[in-house]
Amino acid sequence: MRFRELEGLDRVFQPPLEEVFRKDYYLKGRWKREVFGNNHPLVLELGCGKGEYTVGLARRYSEINFIGLDIKGARIWRGARDARDEGLTNVAFLRTRIEFINSFFGKDEVEEIWITFPDPQEKRRRQKKRLPGALFLNSYRRFLKDGGVVHLKTDNQELYLDTLEMVRHNDLPVEKNSDDVYSEEWNDEMVTIQTYYEKQFLSKGVKINYICFRLPAGKEIKELYDDSE
Image 1: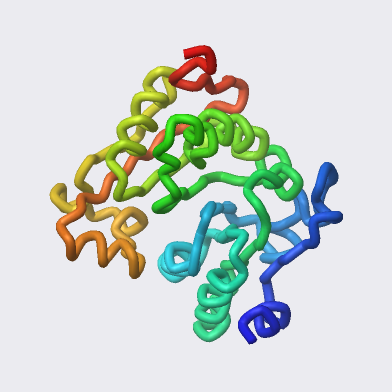
Image 2: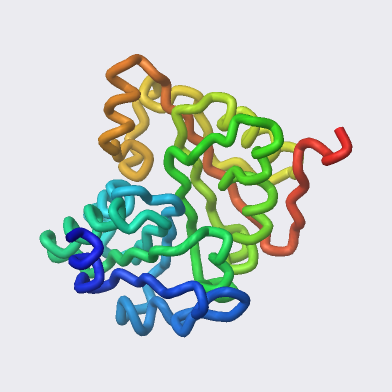
């Protein structure tokens, strides 16, 4: 039922594999004009789940366009329905694998990226698959504006510390970071949006980590650890 309803919701894009595998999607470089009808900044949330953060950002910042990306249609359904029911015109959802992200966005098309509570990929052999890792950062910089912002919010301290170390290892400018966001009484509305699962983490006393850094377009990002190690 959810999948059927998802197909009828506005601003939900679910391209089949043959439309994006090793080729550009028809909206690449045209999201602002053709989907949102404006030239406002474009912000992505990667691995958006139920879209709580994407919708939460869209509620607060009507002058910014937001796209939530996830592979799970049943998750996106919730956020897409909320956006429709609330009449939000600055939010869209894209169902695809993040490995194909360069098929969807053109050079300088995106201003910021949010990565909220991603799979920490704790096993060493899987760490290259981390969304804030070097492999994906080098992919993002192909469409993120030069010096564009990447946000990571996570309950996993190891992921936070490894990301912070990698960012410093590559001399990337850090705008803000914290190993316990809510102990510092930040007033930044973007950072303090809480999803259902984040509220659960907080109720159990889990600290929420956050880092915001800039990604230069012309700089190749290096892994912390060499494959030969």
